[in-house]
Image (cartoon, rainbow, N blue to C red; front, side, top):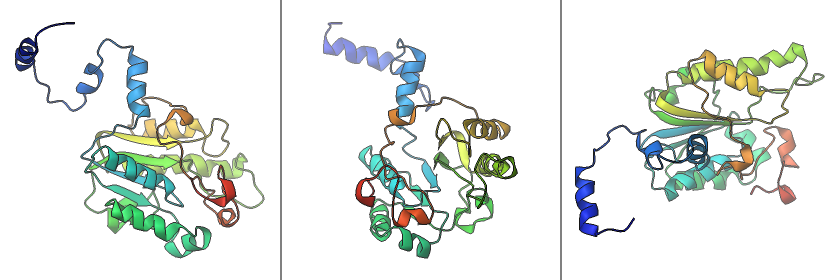
Length: 245
């Protein structure tokens, strides 16, 4: 509409304030279609700017790098806690860029932990005192590890993938703050960690499934994925010339 600026200022003074952190999100476009509006918010990765976030299973740390730069660009003050399952010696054998990646993360005030089992963080002294402070948690394409001679879908080994998700979400119960977000990525046709294992593990541990977002629509989807095993020495998925994006 058209009106005087002074009138708009007076209307703003009398507007009811809101102290609920979550209410301004839908109220920002209150008349827009619900799924489209809320879905756009999730795709843009507009997480709590004050809360810490954690990334699990990020072998070459390229996703943590992208997340740290994303948060810095948005002016966030919460930490990025980047973790790898492997120790640093193994990572240096597989990823020649790992030391540079760690240096960049530390320049963005991120913390990097190696040898982290995401199902046992309650027993990890590095996570002591972090109970109830994580505003967002990320675990991209989880896998419980291959067993020689068996495909991921074989019933003798497939239970390990389902168990991984159950233990992962159980471990997070004490560390994720109320209304915190947990984002787990997987392939539509995955036979290891299937979507049903992710959603089921979350629901069993009192998390709510909000939305399933197509991976390529996610603002942070383009990062240097890795296999997370010895294959990364000579090839990487979705990367040219064995380099991360």
